[in-house]
Image (cartoon, rainbow, N blue to C red; front, side, top):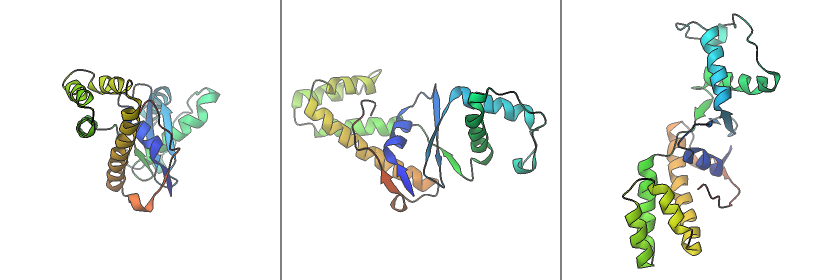
Length: 186
């Protein structure tokens, strides 16, 4: 199965989750992105259509057909599949743990040869908006910025591999797929 580690990394680094949420199809390796509007509408349909004590959704029929704008139908249907069968087929991609991101930045800063930059980066780790300030500080140092992206990508791949293992997918059985490009959001 091919899994796009770059897309999972992007999903994990969207820690706010205020516009989208992300799911991995365990059968196909596809990354599914659902907008909060779609998720909200699907949850409304589930809340209106099913009793709380129903354990098996497969045998349940919707009590009334909800009115859904045509452009939302396919995505709502996919969202309902995810919510109904999530444990069996779909896994929500978690946000990257802040502690892991902080640890990665600290480990990277320790490898920086330029002593002034090293001290700047270490100092930025002890304050508000450390992630943003860290990346902004590297903007003035193109070589180190490129090294950061590679360092962070490697750490993320290790975190993704560990997560895949927790959901029953072995990293070694999954073929990594990715663009290889460096994204400013990384």
